[in-house]
Length: 104
Image 1 (tube, rainbow, N blue to C red):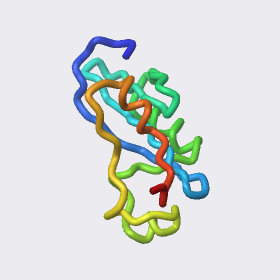
Image 2: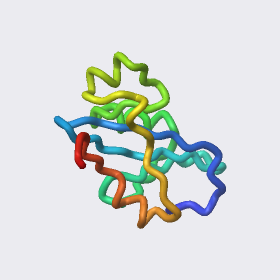
Image 3: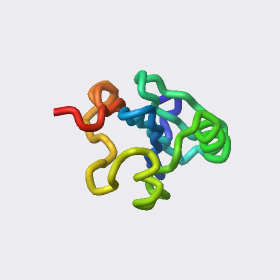
Image 4: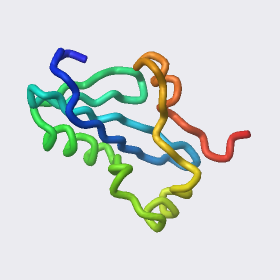
C-alpha cells in the first residue's frame, strides 16, 4: 500500500467473465485514502471510498456483500459456493484473485 495508515474497513468486489470470477479488495485507510488490490496484484490508491467504488463500478465490479442469490445466479454462481479469497500476504492473495468456476 502507498499509505501506512491503519486499515479501517475491507470490502470485497467481484466481476464475472463467463465461468471466471475476478476479485478486487477495497480497503479504507484511517487517512481517508482508499486502496484497491486488483487481480494483477497491483494496489491502486484513490482519494476517497466514493472514488474507488465508482472506479470499480465503471469496471463492472459488484460489491460482494451487496449480492443476493438472484444477483449471484445472474453472474453464474451460488453465494454458498463462493467466498472472497484468503491469504497471509498480498503476494499470496494475488494468486487467488482469479477463480475459475467448476474447476476440479
